[in-house]
Length: 150
Image (cartoon, helix red, strand yellow):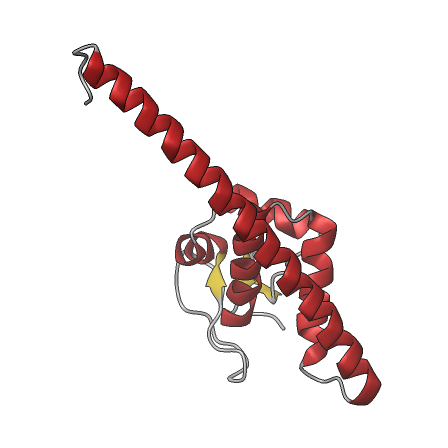
């Protein structure tokens, strides 16, 4: 799908009503909280593909594209690889139309991702608890020796 207006800067672009308006990469980056460079990297890695390009060649994104970027952004701190991100996105895409055994298999795979995410969140909480304990120990040492705690 291509935008029909000449791209002269940030503006709303007409598009298919089912997907919403199109936005340039800068707006998409701001809305999702990622850098333009990161979004381009995710495109090169096959995680996100812009829904359209303007006549001037600018990448144009829809709300569903931003949803995909949000999934990737939330997987990153949990240490999921690009391949795992790609697989989860494929599962989520396929679930929308899957039926029968295919749907059951996809739900099983989604369940495995949920288990992995939960396990990784628990590990991060444990690390945070340990890090907070260390910071508290250092704070106590500073207090004991009359150092500044600012």
